[in-house]
Amino acid sequence: MNIPRKKLLALACCALCWSATAPAEPKGGADPALTQTLRKTQGMLRQVTQEKADLEAKAADLDSQLKEALKLADGLKARIKALEPLEGQVKQQKANLDALQEGNANLQQRISSDAERLRGGVEQQRKLATELEKFRRDNALLVNAVMERTHWIEDCSAKNQALLKANREWIDQGGGKNLWDEIVAAEPFTGIAAVKQENAAEAFRYKLGDLEVTPWREPGPAAPIEPQSAADAEPTESATAPSSQ
Image (cartoon, rainbow, N blue to C red; front, top):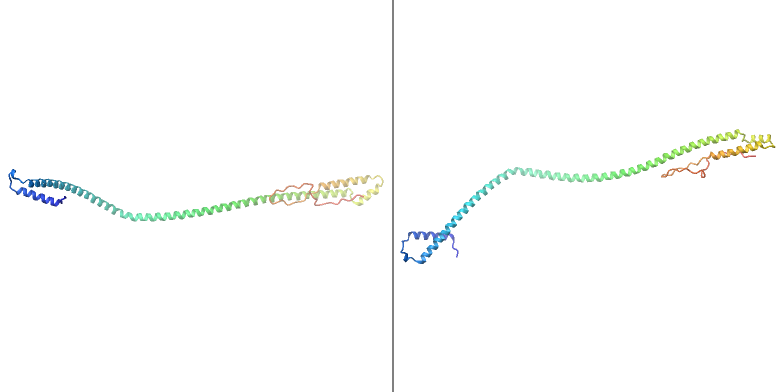
């Protein structure tokens, strides 16, 4: 049965007071029950005294811990009070960080847009370079064709001049009809002049063949100009040779 400590202390104090005031009795006449009760009371008193001492020691330890805790609390309060001005700085820095993050996101989006536009510009530039190269090739073909045509015109002019010269030589050699009649009338029997005239006419025909010009043909848009063979050539100008009589 558990007895409250306050009651035990009160009982122990009463027992001590009673034992101090009670007259001493002969040893042989002491009540055994009372003696047993006194012994129990003294034991309980010693136990209570020891517990009281332990509690006082614990109370002193707790008081020391409480003082340390209060001291730490005062230090924490001082630190909190010192950190209060930093709260505004932290909020400002957080706002600055949020603004920087937003600016970084906008910058990344702008960089992505610029990169896409740059890729489109590069592709357009590549197409323009391809078209420019095509124009250069076509221009080179056109220049080549102009040079070939110029050379052909110069060749035609030279051959026309030679043809005119051959015609003059033919006329100068008596290729006209009146001169032929005069030769025939001068040598009606030998025929030497007729043979010479025939040889001159044959030489004139060979010279006309040599002076034939290859007709001009426009070059293709993507292929270089190939010279035409002499077999497919057609004369651009012809001279009428006089017929022999």
